[in-house]
Every structure is written in C-alpha cells, then in structure tokens.
Image (cartoon, rainbow, N blue to C red):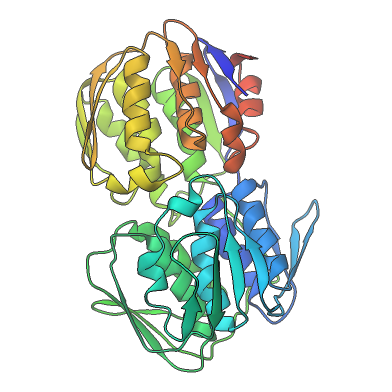
Length: 399
C-alpha cells in the first residue's frame, strides 16, 4: 500500500515493541533446550514469525498465548523445509544449527534475502555439503568441531549462528576472526542470551572458544526487552520537533542501537561524524535527524547497508533529496547537509521497513505531505507502527 503522510505533531507515550534481535536469540535458546519454556513477547513481526516457523520445521512447537509463547524443543526433523522469509537472522542462525544437528534441510527465502551473502559462512561448515551459495539451497552432513576462521566485518550474524551451533558438537571449537569484528553489540547480545541459558562461550585474543557437549537450560520464563532499533523512530521524531515519550526500554541493554540517544545529541551541535559500524540499522532514521539539523553530518563505516533489504545508503540519499534535503552517497556512508527542514514530496519505500518508517517520521515536520510507496513493509519488524503513529496524532491517508 502507498500512504500520504501529512505534517503534524506527534504527542504522547509509546511503548517500545519487543526487541527483534533479542527475540530471535531467546526463541532459539528455548528451542535447543531439553524441556519446555516460555518466551515473553509483547509483540511479534514477520521476522520473528520466520524464526518460530523454522523452530516448528525442525520438530519443535510454538504455542502463542497472551502471557507468552510456550516453546517445545526441536526434535531434529530430517530434511525439513526452512522458510526464512526475509529474515537474515533466521537464515544465518539456523544454517549452522541444522548443520550441527546433522539432520539436513532445505532453506528458502524471499525479497532480497536470496541475494544477501552467505559464502563466508558456508565455507567454514566443515563436514557438510551444500548445494550452492544462494537460496534456495540444501545442506546435508554433520558439522565437525575444530577451528572456524572467518572475517569479522562481513556479518555478525555468522558469528552468532556458530555460537549457537558449536555447543551442540561433541568436541571443543574455536572461532578465529581474521578482521576486526563489526556490529560487536549483536554478538554481545548473543553471549548474554547464551549465558542466561547456561551456555558458555569464552572470549579469546582472536575470537571465541566454545566447549562442546553443552546443554541449553533457559529459565522457565525469559522476557524479551524493548527494541531500541524500533524505538529510534519515535525518539528521532521527538528530536526533530515532536513530543513523543518512549517507554519500556532497558538503559543497560546490550543492544547497540541504544546509542541512538547519544547520536541524536551529537547532531544538536550543528553537524557530526557518526561511525555506523556498530549501529548500521540507525543510519536511515538518523539521516532524517541530520537533515533537520544544521551543519554537515558524515556517516561512515556503513557499507554493509548496501546489502540489506535494499541499498539503504542509496535509498536514504535518494529520498532525502526528493524531499528537499541535501544528501550524498559515499562508498561506505552518507553525507547529509542539514537544512533545518524538509519540503515534502514522494519517497520510495524500497520494500524496506526502516526506509518506510524513516520517511514517515520525516513527514511529520515537513512543509508539505510525503507520499510513501510500499508502506506495508513495516510488517517485517514493527507491524503496529502506523497504528501507534495514528494514536499519537499522526495523520495519513492510505492511497
């Protein structure tokens, strides 16, 4: 659907939805345990649903109730079909786990997911045979313990997938990173989730050491904290002139996107240089804040954004310029010259949830309305976004 969002002032309280990143991890810990447990989720999304779907494909069971999701552990169904939707986390976490279980399976996906890189991860799955390096692909064989050497600057999801899989193996393993780790906060989230489930992974000088033969023992109930990534949209709304208060966030969270507050504060001084290596998902909405600020803002170390649901660097620059802003792509980032505001116009959603939500927030303080294509993309991570937007006083028409 396309929407036309009108200038308005959002005003009121909103509770952050459940963290998508933490939900993936909590659900997988529960699925790999030896007994039933509950994961308490305040909300879901298409990506979280994809992980639940893959748990059931592997022989587990997910029962959704008002008080939480009851997870029955996977049984290791052989040669199952794992439909990952558009969720990169689901795909990259489950591939090594299925390899460790030795049950084989076929992985599928849609949207841009089949085009997103997998080669680095597949190359280290020793003992396994894979039909190709892009979806759909079939994997068979059993993962062997040992040394896993891979780059740290391609995808932190590769490391997380291995950290879930290696404790299931008979022998000890080591992950050695050949380049510095980017998006380190996502790996920290994984380490915390594993620790809470009774699984240890030790940091080493070059990576991580993981003992084999460990058992997942999550708590009877694991509560998923609020999502800083999605809260960032309404926090940015307030930074550009709206009056939204966001509740339900953990100030001591391991989520890297909790840095949104310091990033927004840095823009008040009239331009800034923002290193996005650990907060890539914030770049689209922070670029909106930069457009409403004054001075030049430089986003760097964000090249991986070109491999997301869309090329987010291109999408952000194109849309800001279409709305009367001044943005320039660089090979690994963006340069936004703040003009203090935007005029309005047409923005392309690129079937990307973060682009759509960023443009909706941009529209609230623009001089004229903003028409956004493909607004249904928000279902990937924040299905209730426009419902909350309207409740806070947001004005839009579905075209």
